[in-house]
Amino acid sequence: MRTAMAEAEVGDDVLDRDPTMRALEERVAGLLGAADALWTPSGSMANLIALMSHLRRGDTFLAPVGSHVLDAELGTAAWLAGGMPRPLEHDAGPGKVSPDAVRRAAGSSGPYYTLRATLLCLENTHNAAGGTVTAPDEHAAVMAAARRAKLRVHLDGARLWHAAVAQGVPPAALTVGADTVQVCLSKGLGAPVGSVVAGSTEFVEEARRLRKMLGGGVRQGGVLAAAGLVALDRIDRLAEDHARATTLATGLQERGWRAATPQTNIVLIAVADLEGTLRRFEESGVRASAMSGQVRLMTHADVGDADIATALDRIGPIEPPPRSNGGPAPRPVRTSGRAPAGQAGQ
Ligand SMILES: Cc1ncc(COP(=O)(O)O)c(C=O)c1O
Image (cartoon, rainbow, N blue to C red):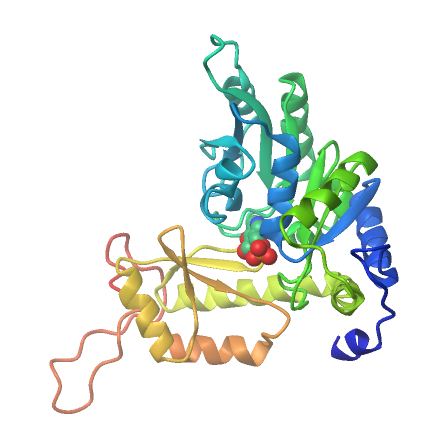
């Protein structure tokens, strides 16, 4: 990837386009089944550009609880794009909303002083729910409900590649009908920077202006786009990350941890003491983060089989091993089976 970046053919993307950036944008548009696409420095900026193009002040947008646009973009959807957020419960499984929930929430026939629901934001995979996958038929059913309710649809596909690989379907099968889609080149694929937002030709023209407005236009962007092109070559490899996440979760379950069985590359562990557990992991040399009140571990391009084995050894059983001499009376070590609910002490 570093070599590709160094050798990239470049132009000035702010003035009249950079050839490598253009190649990346066209390739992503093709993968997503969109008319055109635009590189952005980050997924957050790509989402914001889409929301700025869809929303007006006085609008509200619907999104599954815990979506990145709701919880992890500092409220820019409201204060820059002008849309009031309306979270929807996951009534169709973790990370997913049902067509019926969309239909009910979209009804905006109130008096003139009520917010108008104009946009639905979906997320596939859903990060905070644990990398959960929406299937093409589920996506199509929700899309149809959104269309009937005259909602526009933005799909946050930061990990759309993971959803596609997990189900053995092309990414475009998961974008059908969406007005705009954003995908990340960094998540699990290893690019140091970059996302792409896709949609109609008119949307991308406007998106280019919005990107400049937000300070996201770059000049010799080919250096960065070259990394994105290498990242796209790695999509099929995500299956290895998913398999390693399953190995990790199984190993944790065998050690008594309440780890959810992952659908993709995210492992969530329910613990009684989040801060204490994160500290314990960190001290043992395993870096984890907090997500939805749980511990989140992720597999990606730089985590191999040996790393999973090392992580499991370092984390160890949920109950600390007995002290050999001088310490308090040894406690039983749980080496298999799940910790009973409420007794996951770490
Ligand atoms: C679902 C989702 N959307 C958007 C983003 C934002 O991406 P970035 O960190 O590139 O701004 C993330 C980042 O983790 C994400 O998980």
